[in-house]
Length: 103
Image 1 (cartoon, helix red, strand yellow):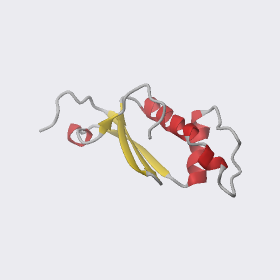
Image 2 (tube, one colour):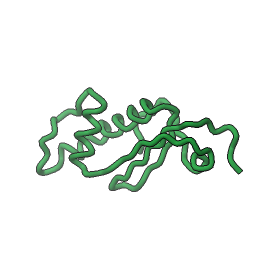
Image 3 (cartoon, helix red, strand yellow):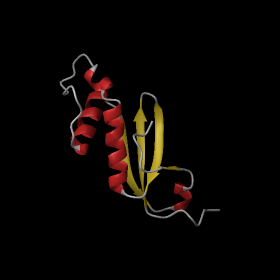
């Protein structure tokens, strides 16, 4: 049975990192991207610590640029999709906002 309190649509962020997979639901696409950028910035030392890194010493202020540089350098992956099915959303942890990253 699905939870009637789950609001749809939700934006589902799936992150595949070296520390395991994470799956979170956000009320808006911008919230998910902000959390993803915060996660990239919080873990920026992984990018600058890579032997062949061309990344700047500090993460970019622009969310999209921080996300792109981080995920290109680390070769981790993520997907962000809009989900309308309450049955699927019932099995995904809802993100608590504001949030300083995903970990």
